Amino acid sequence: MPRKKRQASTFNLSFLDIMSCGFGAVVLVFLIIDHSMEVESKTLNAEVLSEINLLDEDIREGEAGLVRLRNALEGIDDDIVETQGRARRVTEEIDDYEALIASLEADGYTTDDDVEALKAEVNRLQEEVKKLQEAADSEAGRSAREFVGEGNRQYLTGLNLGGNHIAILVDTSASMLSDQLVNVIRLRNMQENVQREAAKWVRTLDTIDWLTAQLPINARIQLIGFNTKTTFLNDQGPGQWLEVADTPRLEAATQALRATLPAGGTSLHNAFDALGQLTPSPDNIFLITDGLPTQGDSPPNSTTVSGNDRLRLFRQAVRKLPQGVPVNIVLAPMEGDPMAASEFWQLAGVTGGSFMSPSSDWP
View 1 (cartoon, rainbow, N blue to C red):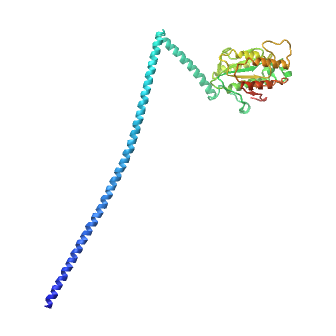
View 2 (view 1 turned 180 degrees about the vertical axis):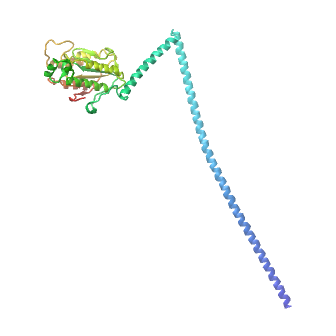
View 3 (view 1 turned 135 degrees about the horizontal axis):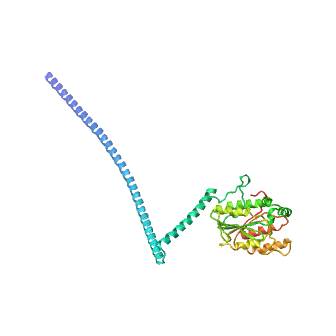
């Protein structure tokens, strides 16, 4: 009996061991399967996220492309509208030209006449362009002439150099030979070449060269010399304005002034009368002189003129100036004429011009 019980007990323990080992194996298998599923799930999730990121990138690129396409379409729409507008304007111009041609034909104009008229207009414009190009080439587009003072100096003068029609009046009386009366008397009895080299007259000529080199390239000028008479130095004659851009004619006008010898008395009456011959009237005036006038419209009755007489003649002459036009004065004072500076300064101020009495080495 004891042996049988022992055997039964041994059998029961072996069975329990087997059952424990089987359960552990099942648990191990389950854990292995669960881990495999977790690894596979993570792998699948990573792949899915990668695909999602790629799709998001494609979406962003697609949206950017859509924006570019919309902008391109808007640009095309704008171009279409602009092209339609141009086409409409061209059509209107064609209609206008056709109407003009019909009108010209109705008025008896022939096609040949119209062509010749257009050719003449084109030639005129080409000549004008040529003049402007020549002037631009000679002074890099800044002025029609070149003037360089001693030592390449530049001058700040305060002169009003603007205007569309600029009149320059230059005193050519005998007093322009010198600042001193005794030297004037001495020089006017000398040979012409000596008179041309007189320091005051040379300075006057240089002033004209400097002035014409500063004027606007699109302006027109008239250069007038005066003593007891007036001389239009422009070869186109009285009343005709000279283009600043027309360099050859401008040079010819200044050369005509250089060929002039200072002589005689001074009549501002006649000088200001000459301004009335200009059409249109000047909108800026320059007066280069050395003192008050010595006569009016006609020669004086006596051989001498007092200071008061000269003052009276000046104030009478001023009344002949065109109204509202600035008068710029360049005065080279003459001895024995103390009232000149004050009177000319007042004239410049009243008219809105400027007054300048330069040094002996200007310009």
